[in-house]
Figure 1 (cartoon, rainbow, N blue to C red):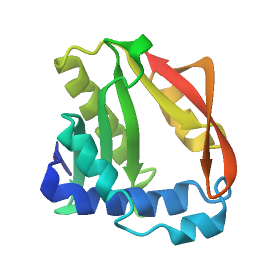
Figure 2: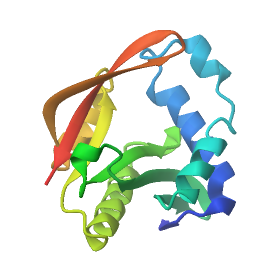
Figure 3: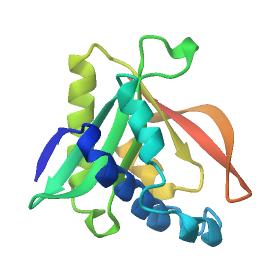
Length: 164
């Protein structure tokens, strides 16, 4: 297993990981028709803009193949100035539960600390019990804040988790 900073050349692989992870992780939470419609290149424009804005992404490879990624940087909300934010952390479905997520999270936390972020925030879908358990196990706590988003015509509730 290797983890390295992702660059522009990695965008297609990052997008593929996002799409395939969404299809598995959000099954039963997001309308299936919407999940089925997600193409592997769906996230390329967003990821290109994310990296161009000076934000960060890490890619995890197993035997040279991209199997996980994380996007992160300075918190996007002004009231969290000085905080870091994990925007996404995804693994291809066959690699969940094997320690790859923990390795990726530890690498991100280490990089954020190196960049001066002592406090971290992130959002998790309320229905995503696996992710909520993962973050709680790794020192994140729910702070009571919620926000709402939409995917495939369904209203979703996200919960804010913080650490530090």
